[in-house]
Image (cartoon, rainbow, N blue to C red):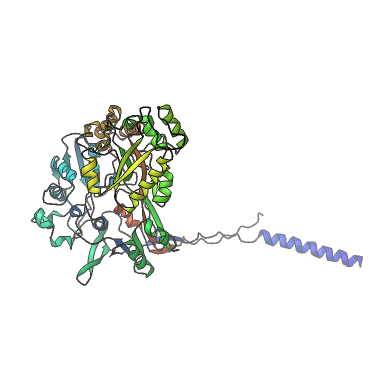
Length: 568
């Protein structure tokens, strides 16, 4: 038995030794790289756009956002702007400017062509600008006035020069307009262009070209765009971009649920919760170029409390502005600290934030000589003047909700306001322009203005005839704004705007409330979608060429397994 046990032990040890030897001779297989998913061309994307068809013409779409959406796909401009508000090349290949900021030279891409194959030239630019100068077209008056002052010189077929009468750094903002083809429209007058067939059969130079209009009962209900094969940048991955028009968001959402569209152009508070309940629908949000604020009439001698910066700051402390964003705006806004939009190159992130602090506000009122009756009531000055005033505001449900929240917050610290609802036209024409208001709830809309240029709203020279409705008479702030308006050095401009924002918060000539955001819904089948800060809702298509529906798997090259032999 002892001999047998020894034999078993020897056999076992031998098997272990063999196993170890075999293990050291096992081939080492190199793992091949996993397939990489890459975008590929193909597919059809359909978007439900809220609004109606007007004209597919960039010089006729200033007042129709639905048209601007489609025109952003069909037409190109010399430049466009990234989400920080900085200009990037579009049809322009490069540009430069003189040290005095009065001369700008632009070179057009050599491969830029119209959808009919004709080259985009300098003459197309001069032709389009001439239309923007015309008194016969529905164009914003400030835009028309600017172009009437600028001289344009054609250097050659692909090079053009702009000569300004004086330095104006925001000039590049005005070069993002869609270009029109001179070779098609040169014999059409500005007046005739309004009803010309070109508006239904556009020829642009953008990433998509019109394939056909979709009609029902004689009305245009949509359109089909196809990717432009000779687009000067990257050809879009998605072959067809289909647009369908809807009267409201609820109709567009119903169309999505019915499988008719993959995207909804706009989602607001009314449909937000319904959209969020759709598991396959992604929501993209970008800040709009809009500021909701309270103007204070600083020049009204009956309102002495508005003329003291510490009391104006106390008014801000008395407002729960975050609650306004969360409730009245259903979270669809960003708390505002000043007049320059966050996320842009000109925004100063280090400026002071005034918190919601009603107790400190009350203390400031008391230190300024105001008293609050023990049983509640209005804050009152020593001479018996109540801290109360009227506030005009647009007569609609949203602004009514905002004003009621403001009135409630200020009442808690003894400030009484009398809300005065008016139409928006009346607000501007009867109250703001003649400076006949006490306080006003206003939405400043700076659509299509990537450069902040706050000068028109806060500069001293704008106090009486301009848009400085608060009549803020501050030399230091004006100097910062004037410098930023004429300097071509971006660092110098950013510094000037930084100083302006610091000064604004110190003085608080108006009360910033919030910046609204734009929400955009797209089915998760569509990949590559990104939305940053917006200067127009159509900016959501800035990277449309990168969107894709179709993918392909890029398999890495196979590698032959190798065998590692034991060392001899």
